[in-house]
Structure formats: C-alpha cells, structure tokens
Image (tube, rainbow, N blue to C red; front, top):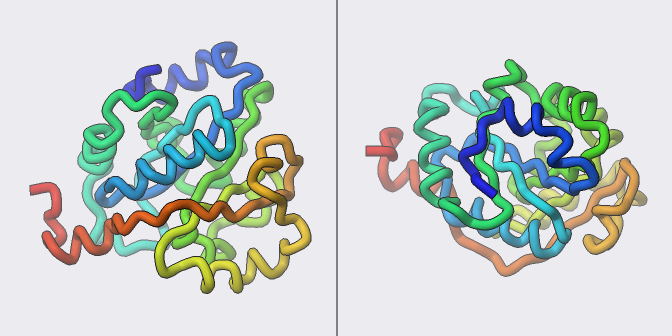
Length: 209
C-alpha cells in the first residue's frame, strides 16, 4: 500500500476501501516526528485497522500561523518518517477537498465513501481542548474516537469537557471499531517522548533547515 497515493484517488477508488476500517489521523505535523508514527502504528495494531490515513492539515485554526511551516514541507517531513510502512498513508486530502475543519472533512468522506468505516484518531494532547474544535459534537456523533496516551496530557485530557460529558460512551478499545457513535476510548500505549514543540524549540521556527 503506497503512502504517496494522491488524495483524489483515495476517494475515487472508493470501491477499494469498501468494507475496510480506516483510521483518520489528522494533524499539523509541524514537524512530523516518531511519536506520530508510534501512534499510527499502535492504532493499526490495537484497533485492527486496515489502514491509517495521516492527514496533513493545510493549517490549524487553533495554532499560531507564524509558527507553521508550509504544508508541503510538513507533508515531506511525515513522508520521510513513514516511508513504506504497511498500512500508513500520508495524504493532504484536506487541501485537495478545500476543507479547513475536521468536521467538514469527515462529512465529505462519509458522504462519498459510505461503505468504508472510519475511526477518528488523536493523541491525548488534543483531548483537553477538543471542545474548542469547530463542530466538535458533530465529530463525536459521527465517528468512533480513539484517543492515544501522550506523556503529560492524560490526566488533563480525561478531566476535560469532552471526557466528562461523554463519560458514559467510553468503551474498551477492542470494542471501538465495531461501536456506533457516539463512542470513544482511551488507549494506554508505551509512551513516546517525541514532541513537535520540543523540536521547534530546539531548532527554531525554521526546523526544516
């Protein structure tokens, strides 16, 4: 499975993904690091996914644009890490679709690929602020969500607004791929210290040089 497959073909080849379970792992990847690959690898293994699409966002509305590298540069950094790892596909599908928010991307995907089962994947670092995302309740109501442990974020995230309000919809991670939304799980995995923030702090904003 080639991780360089174009975003348009991911949708145009909907028949290829019919009956498959695909993890959607979006992010800035500013820059990509081994921690991202670690989460994708654990998602494939723990959730028994057929593939994980690592979606490089055009830009994160909740992050400072001045500290954000160009999309092509971020995508390149991710492709270099993923290489040809089975089941991992790097894509800038949101750029191709013209979507800015995750909720809009999800809406298009489930409309165009109704016979593919999608699971939303994110690190625990996003959990505490998830309720600030545009139409976050739509995401919760539409896709099962898998949250993966990240050093320093678990306690804060699990006490955040999303986790508190949807506490009764939490399920064991083995059940998540078969659960109907709303459903979410927290997946404890071996911790990886990779951090885009630390990379930028160490190398400066021009981390790609």
